[in-house]
Image (cartoon, rainbow, N blue to C red):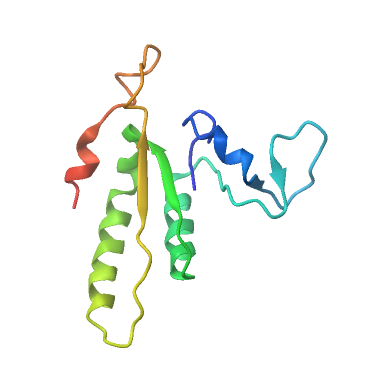
Length: 127
């Protein structure tokens, strides 16, 4: 799941093994769009967080790739999910749920064009 372009987050290698999922018309020149793709992108951090929470409830694993500065948009959603996981872990018959993994980008390479606006390490201290 990614609210930013997969390529801009330097994940282009994903397209060697899967493509973007797309349910609308696919036209010549569309970039890695197929009906059965596994990469989900939309410019909405909230939607990506919700997609991933639902996705992992099906028993699968996934990750949320997002620019570090924009991950704060889902701080409260992350906290609610963590509280829900804690409550679920106390129910004996409930099977374990896969982890919700974040990959925060834009902080490990040179950022001449947007470094000051796209770096914010505060998310790790949210919980």
